[in-house]
Amino acid sequence: MSTASETPVLDTLAAMTIDSIERCGLAPDMLMVARIAALAASDAPPISYAAHIEMAIETGMTAEQVQDVLVAIAPIVGTARVMTAAGNISAALGIAIAVADAEIETQG
Image (cartoon, rainbow, N blue to C red; front, side, top):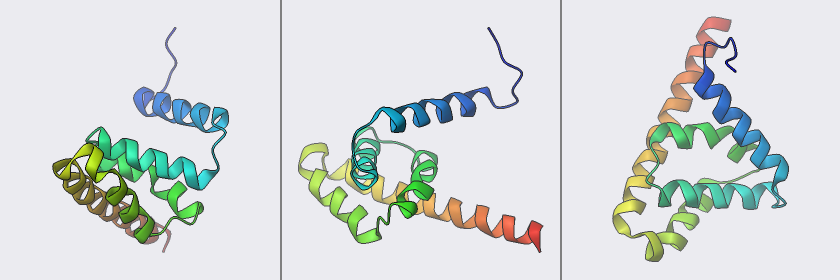
């Protein structure tokens, strides 16, 4: 049961994310807090954070709130995971900026 897609993995991840959001009863800002905490706890790579940047912005999440999430989970997940998460979040922001710059160049 294969579909004709050039990006089957990304399509599957997007469908899973949409399904999760539709089934979750949390407010969007609380959903983002939970997702950031889960990404940090699971030692997610920068691209996983990058996939959540747009939604975080849409919910009004600030850099200070992201830092607060990391502070809150530090005693649970440990300093190494929190420091890795902080670096990966910074890398994700760099990815987002590079993508935005590329889109601006192709439009203008």
